[in-house]
Structures are given as C-alpha cells and as structure tokens.
Image (cartoon, rainbow, N blue to C red; front, side, top):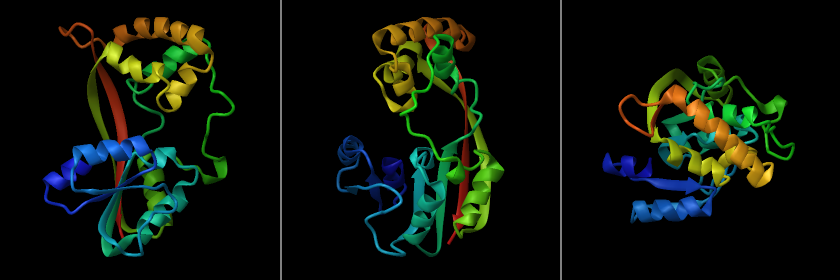
Length: 215
C-alpha cells in the first residue's frame, strides 16, 4: 500500500505495529518515514494528514471504534479516512483453511485474542458504515469488494502452517500432529478451488469491505 501511494505521487508516512513489517516497508519504499506504532495511539499530532488509510487494520484491534476515532484525530478537517476489513461471514476461499482445521478437530484456543462483544460490530457494509459514523466521520460510503485470489496451494498453506496470524495459531494449537491432520483435510478441500488447467493453483473467492468518510 505504501509503495502504491508513493507511486501515485503522495507524500507518505507509514505506521505498523510489527517491527518486521516496519523494516520490510523501509526496504520497499526507501526514503519514506516508517514508524512503529499501534492503535489507538498514533505518534502524530492532531490534523497531521490530508488522508489516512487503514488497510485491514480494524480486523486486529480490540476496540475498533477507538481506533477509528484516533484515525480521525490525525486527519485534517475536510480530509478523508478510508478503511478496509474482511467481510463476515467470509467468502468460501477465505474459509478454506478454517474449514480444514475444523475438519481436523481443531478448536479456537481460549487464549487467542478476540474482540469483546461490547466493542464488536457487524462486519457488513452497513455495520462498517455505522462504525465510521459513530467515530464522527461524515459523508460515509461503504461497499463490498469481491475477487478470486489465485495462489499456489502449498504456498497458501505455508503461512498458517508456520503460525502466521490467528488462523496459524489455530492450525498449530495442537502441535505437529494437529498441523498434519489439518493439512490432510486441506489437501482434500483444495479440490473445490482448483484453478482449471493450472496444476497446483487455486482460485479462492474473497470478499472485503471498503468504507470512507470525511472529517
């Protein structure tokens, strides 16, 4: 996202909570100021930016409304805030690895972080629009985006198998035996998404939500 914005002529400053992603962004976009930080406290003064973008960030915060209020704070009056999140329920391609884990008898560990019900919101176009409105944004627009993500089956499995993200924690919740059991189920379920004529490739339907509003 940072590289794309720079390519369009924007003066960009980027923030990520994960130090590894900060370093990766610095390598990909030399000269861009990249800081380590996390919502709901960003290292910038009020009204610092003309536009603020949070790409699949609200999926990972415990208090989404507070996070949006902070994004609004660092945006100048008249500026815009735009966010993307995954739709819930997800599209079939997004559910593939979760289905494999469930078929293998794996269940979500109690210690895996979730959003408290009192802070949660419907992950729908209307639910996201209402969240932006509650954060004080005006002229809110929300829409659903859908596409097929094309990936090699083994590469798609590699991240969760290595423990990446919440789905990776679920896949690894019972150690190597659980991972192996989920992989067997995954190999079977992949047949539903085989990309015709492209051996080992998958066409995975995805759905996300995009919303924006004015400060």
